[in-house]
Length: 254
Image (cartoon, rainbow, N blue to C red; front, side, top):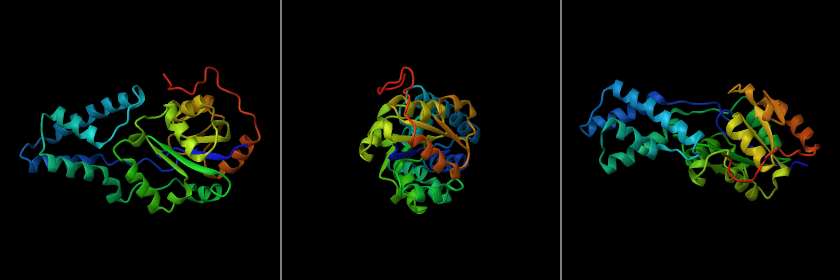
């Protein structure tokens, strides 16, 4: 029987929100004030290269990301330096861009369904973060009245791992007070959400409403396109015996 449900944040609970231009503008202004201005073309080139590096860190090395590392990488590529006080101010501004923009917004139907599910299941959040840290994502959840619904919140920048690392899932389940066979995880990315959940013995539900990653169907115990489908899916999975994935392990995924 299922007693807990965990959710991914980006592309599952919330739609993706990008602030590329706003972050580049903040960096451009800070460099100008420090007397080390760089051209827009230089900033754009460094931005693209930094995200190629970050994709490798996230998907291959499973290392946590964040603005401090992003800014350090950008400055190295631009061969520029900022005074410590200016750098610290810039880090905070870059992290809080989405709060200033009043973004992102919950996926259609998510708030209503979460309030309903919270009466029947223990709810958790398991999220990798990029340039918006866990402390800011908490504020976004609080803004939308969703924070009190979750008994456990796990963010990669705070735990020190990214999905599919087993620790992201097992530490959440421990705080929820349930075992893997008693929980299901809802996420949109096969290579992080589904593989990580199944490797520790959880059921994996693929959400297609945002990312449309239909290639993940073979890894999923169930697939939903709208939040309104979750109640029925969870009831069905709750009555099924879980079948361990071949080669499943509770250790870090390769």
